[in-house]
Length: 323
Image 1 (cartoon, rainbow, N blue to C red):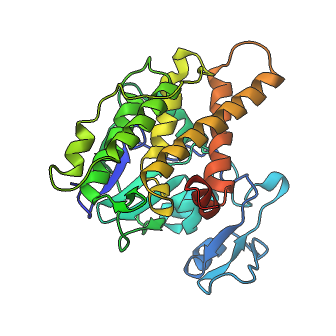
Image 2 (tube, rainbow, N blue to C red):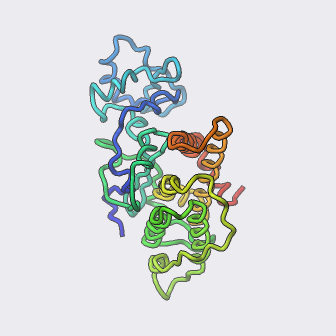
Image 3 (cartoon, one colour):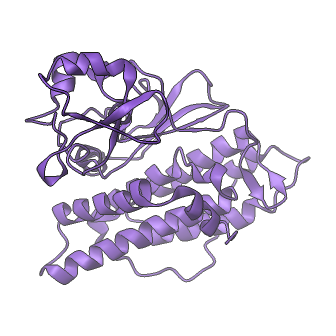
């Protein structure tokens, strides 16, 4: 069982540190600034033109930081001026968190990353070997983690009428990561087909004979019962794509926002389908085989769509069959 006082990461993400690629600083996003941070940032500017009004924002928000040509934050010049002058603690909360996606539940604090961040995307390519869930650094250095707080809600659903327990869900989460990252030559499509079959198998479990976590650990890899689509990337890139899927399986908000296990795995299918479309679009515009650089671009656009632009509540309803 996890320790609720600790922070957990995927091993491929645990070493993450900002390399000042600037994607988050040049996307034209409205960056809310907390009132208590205004004075320190004001020392970097002679005027107040950098802080714009934010009508309707919560009372603790002083405004939003202005951005200039190309959607670039006015404080991003060869890196972040705020971070360079005053450290990570001085950043707006939104900047402190990006690209971290945080889930907080009774098991602990769980952190995955958005690969729209080029540095996070690079980690998918740089990692070698299986991926594990590990205890790691605080989610937000010097700050309080914010995300989906599921501390006081019921565990994820196993079926429409049965809850999991947190130990069982922890075992399933680790099982998804293992299934997606331990065999490099297994295609992403095959890995998801295996998980599909295992969800159906696990949903036949009933309390009394053995703990749910034991049922997860006894699942077999040969229960894929559907036709497996042809891969859209070469075997060289299978591990990269499956690491992306593992990042969506871990610390998943969908487990709580949707109908538990089924919606989590459907979200993985949606992630793979979105990436497939992004790769197809790149191939329509370029000749030759898919390169690592092009795949990285497709991964970044996939997470831009699913992590930052999608309405998560609506997506949860759709993936749960509620609309």
